[in-house]
Length: 467
Image (cartoon, rainbow, N blue to C red; front, side):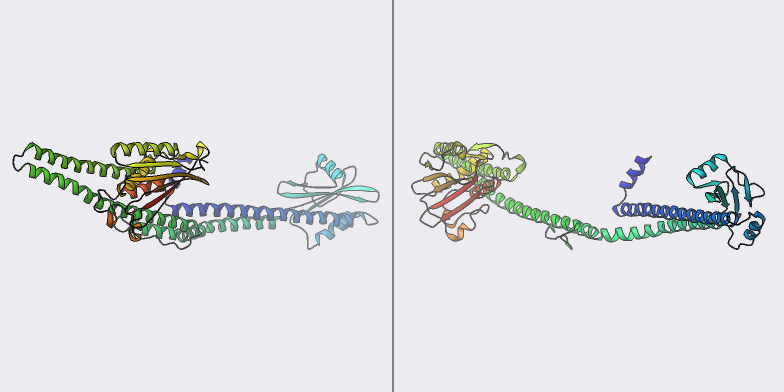
């Protein structure tokens, strides 16, 4: 049953749940405060009434026992005329033999119990309850003798006061239920208003309106931090969608060019019969376009893979020199006229200096693209590579003697499908450097390019080393 109740509570709206919690804690506090008030008042009433009985017992014993001659009748008459007598007051005085020498209880409503008398003589002050009577027993010493005085009465006024107090406290608790419910509903509504504003704003945001942002009223509270985090997520999504849109647009254009060329050449080829030499030349042209298409497709897939952190194993240890030698071997295998010169600096005194954490295939793809660009745009088709260990990084410096890059083009070389104005006549897709930049960033490295038109280009790559 309890599990069902808790399940229903947690399935409610947050405002209803907060109101119920506010009400529950309010009721607990009110009941706790009411119990403390009631029991404190009851304790005070009992203590006050017992003190009055105690004083009454002592004053009666003083009148009776300190006179020269004990005259119970005279004391009884005085007590009857006393205006401060308690309701149903009973006074009984006993000597050391437990004989009653004075009593205002002719009907013997107050029972005399030997064990109680012994306690009074031992403790000198005892209180207890007998039926509707509250009884105080005191030990009074006079004339070389000890007397036990029992004083009893009914505290009707005190009982009425406590009953009235109980009624008031119950009434206040019931009214508090209503007030706490109302206050809890208002309080939870005001507390959740910023959240409601966030929800309304989020409902307005769609893929066509990613530029909208959630209002942040207070950055220091939890809702403000949530809104700020959501805005940061929207900024990343907006940037991602923009890149995706541009990427799809540019990729479609780049893929369309070789496909259109292949289609046109084949259609022309099919118009009439041709010689074997013409067929061979057309097939070679189509094959070149297909190779360009394959290269473009592979690079596009590599760009997508480099942006997908979930499939990149960047915790694997990779020897950067081995990757560089592999890249050199593969490039020179496909391009016999390319020359790649690799030299290790004196700072590489330990083999661990050559180890980085990352994805070997992606790092090789990045280095291969840099080497390919350097050799392609150089008249002598060569590149010099210098490896050094600087602090906590491995530094790779690629130097060529090619056509160079202008200052204006340097600002855009990492943009997808961008090609420098002096590189249009060279074959290429324009996504090599974007791929390199993405891979280096994914591996927490940096890339910097310095160049002047006609004076070659220098590319500096830094990757975090193992030590």
